[in-house]
Structure formats: C-alpha cells, structure tokens
Image (tube, rainbow over the protein chains, first blue to last red):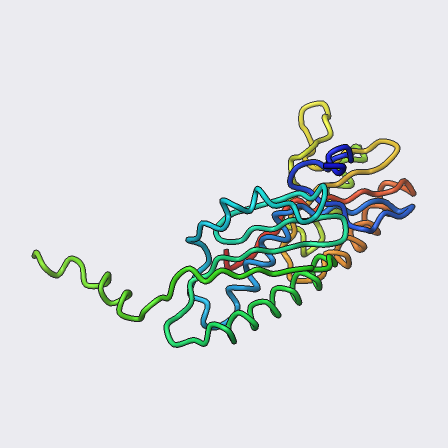
Amino acid sequence: MAQSTAAKPEVGTARLAEDTEQGRTTIASSVVQKVAGIAAREISGVHALGGGVSRAFGALRERIPGAGTADTAGVAVEVGEKQAAVDLDIVVEYGASIVDLARAVRRNVIGSVERITGLEVIEVNIAVNDIHLPEEDEETEPTGSRVE
Amino acid sequence: MTDVSEDVEAAVLAHPDVARLDGAFASYLPGRRVLGVRVGARVEVAVVLRTGRPVREVVAELRARVTRVAGAAPVDVVVADLEWESW
C-alpha cells in the first residue's frame, strides 16, 4: 500500500497533463463519464446502459493509483492524470452480435474519450447484462384500452 | 465600473461552447457573487461545457478570452461537467 502515502487529488476531479505557465486544466471525472456514456449509446445495437452489479465491485479496484472515480447509470470511470479506465454495463438489442457490438462500443468509447478529453484510455471493460427483445416494448404499450 | 471577475464571467459565457459557470468557487462582490470565477495571483475559472469538441481546444480559447480581460496571470480552467443537448 505504498500508494496511500501519495497525495490524493480532490474526489471527482482529475488533472490533465496540461500544466503550463498559462495555467492548469482540470477535467472532472463526470466529464469523462458522460463522454464514455454517449459514445457507448451512439452504437446501434446498444439498447441501454446500466442494470449491472459490476459497479458495486468497481469501488474495490484501484487500477490507477490516486485516481478519481465517478459512477452512474452503467458507466464507471477511473481517471488519473493522463489515463482513464472505463467500465460499462450494457443492455443489447436482440439479434446483435455481442462480440462485434462490444468491439464497436470499445472502439467508439476509446476514440471519443481520447479525442475530447485528451486522456489515454487504458481499458474499456464491457459487461452485457441483458438482451432487449422487441416484444418487451409491445407488452407495455397497450394500457388504458382494457377499461373504458 | 465592473469588477475583473465580472469581466471574466462575461468573456467566458460569451463562448458558444460554455453552458454555464460552475459554482465550485466564487468571487464575492458587493451585492452579488460571481460563481465559478476567482481572481487572485492566478485566475481560476470553473465551467460546464456544451460541446463535442476536444476540451483542450475549448480551454485554450477560453484562456485566451480570459487573458484579454484579466491580464497576463495564469488561467486555471476546471471543466466541471458537460451538458449534451440530447441529455
């Protein structure tokens, strides 16, 4: 536990490598989280984010020493000074190839997070928690017609 | 006669990619406070962005705007959150 002696950054924030005479730039973990969430949702075949238990265990892991963490709605991120790690819980549409889908999600998340935040994404872990069937929508729609 | 913090506020809010200033800290003036701006030896600004552009580019533009109204002090920028139109 040699890392515990290092100064911890303010919870929920990460300092970008950019620290020049002109000033420092700090990016909150929630920014990384939103970018990752949006990038995941953009992929056709991803029905929703969330619904898993992997987030509960996320807090126990610390892949980046002194990293800030943020966690909501199926997207957990760990953000350090130069790197970020992302955990996603996704619900996929029935019929999509999960392997191909996961690969596409991973590629899009890495691309977006690196482009927008300038952080290097070291890993994107994807947990597929459920498959969404088209019938599930139809079941919930016809309400109100039973009693007039 | 406006305070420097108000000039900084106006300069930052005028940028199209800035949704609002974030209230992590503030400047306290007679009668009002300017959220997300602190002016001392350094200028500190906390913003919520509304953008899909690289944060680094937007921050560089903000820094230039702030320097124009607040002088040559270093400008620390905190990107506190993002707002997306579809959210």
